[in-house]
Length: 534
Image 1 (cartoon, rainbow, N blue to C red):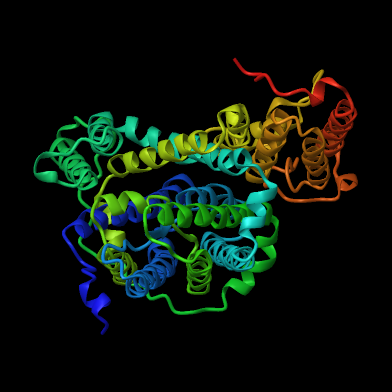
Image 2 (cartoon, rainbow, N blue to C red):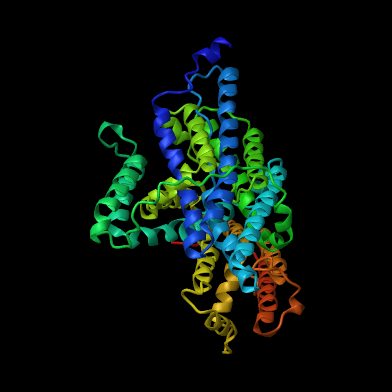
C-alpha cells in the first residue's frame, strides 16, 4: 500500500452523517415505490418485497461498491487525503414516475384485459425489468454522448423537465401523505426544514434526517393508538423478514414487447440521469474531487443493467449532493455502509421491514426536500432570463399527475372516465386534452423548455426546430398520445375524437414553427433582448 493510500482516512465521523442521509434517501424511495404499487394500485406486496426489492437493492450495492473503490483510486492517484466518494442511490424522479406511469398502469391494464391478478403482477414485474434493461442500454450508449445532449438541449429544457417531476410527482404526492397525518408528518417535515433547508444544527449535531425519522415514528406509535394522528393507525408490522435473492433471470424477455410502448416515458428518465451524472461529476470536481465523468456514468449505467437483470425495477444514479456530503466530512465509508445496508437489506428482508415500520408520512418530508432542491437548482443553474422556460416545462408533468389521479377507478369510475374522454362539445374534451398533454411528459417538457429558451435568446430558427420535432413526435403519439395508456400509433388508425389529437396538435406545432421561422427574418427579431418578462 502506498504512502498516499495509508494517509487516506476513508472512514471518519462524518461518514455516519453521510450514511444516515444517503441510506434514508434510498429507504424513502423504496417506501414510495412499495406504497404506490401496493396501496394505490393494489399490487401484491409479496412480489414487491421478494422479487422487486432484492434486485433493485442489489443495483445500489453494486454501484456504491464501485464508487467506494473509485474514491480509493482517486485518493491514491491524487494524493488527496480528503476524497469524498460519489453518492449513488435510487433515482427518485424515475422510481416514482415509473411506478406511477409504467408499473401501476400496466398492472391495471393487464387485469382489465382478463388476466388474473397473480399473472398480471408477474408480467408487470417482467415489464419493469425489461424497462430497466432498456434504460441501462440507453445509459451505456449515452454515457459516451451525454455532453452532446447537453449542448443541443438548453438547460431550461433538461432541468425544467426534472423540476416539473419534482413539483408534481416527488413533491405533491408525498405532501398528501404528510397532511394525511398532519401531527406526525408536519413535525417530521419541520425537522427536515430546520436542519437541511435552514442549515441549523441540532444539539450534539444529531443528523437531521435521523432525528426527523425517529421523532416522527415515535409520535406515530405513541399517539396512533389514541386516534390522535389524523390518519389510520396500522400498528407495528409483524416481525417477519421478506427474504429474496437477486438471482439473474431471463424473465425480462417476456416483458420486452409490452414494455416497448412505455419507452417514450422510460428512455428520457435514463437520459436525464446521464445529464445529471455529468453535472454531478462537475460539481464534485469544483469541490476538489476530480473524478472521470465516463467512470461515473458507466458505473450508474451498469448498476441499472445489473438491477434489471436481477429483478430490479428502479434505476440507480449518482446523487447531486456530493459537495454536501463533503461538507459533512464524509469520505468513502458512507457509500460502503449504504451499499451494504441497502443491498443486504433488500435480500435479507430487513429493508422491507423498515419500509413497513416507518410511516410514509415520516419519510415523505425527505422527498419534499429533494423536490425543493431539484426545483431550486433548476432555476439557479439556468440563466435568469430562462426562468419562464424552466417554469413552462413544469406543465406536462402536472397534466400527467392529473390524468393519473383521474384515471384511478377509486376516484373516477371507468365508465365515467371513458364518457368524459369522448364527450362532444365546441372544443376537444378537456379530459382528452389533459391526458394527451400528460402522455410523454418528460420529452414534452424537455422540448417545451428548449423551445422557449431558444425563443428568449432570439434563436428563432433553433426554436422552430424544436417545434418541428414536437409536431413529428405528437403525430405518432410519442408525445401527446390520445390513448389513455400513452401508446404510440399510426394516427389514421384512430377513431372518434381521439383521431383529432395527432392532426390538431401536430398541425398547430407545424404552423407555429413556420410562423416563428418567418418572423426570424424580421429586423426586430435580431435586436438585442430587452427581457420579455418583468
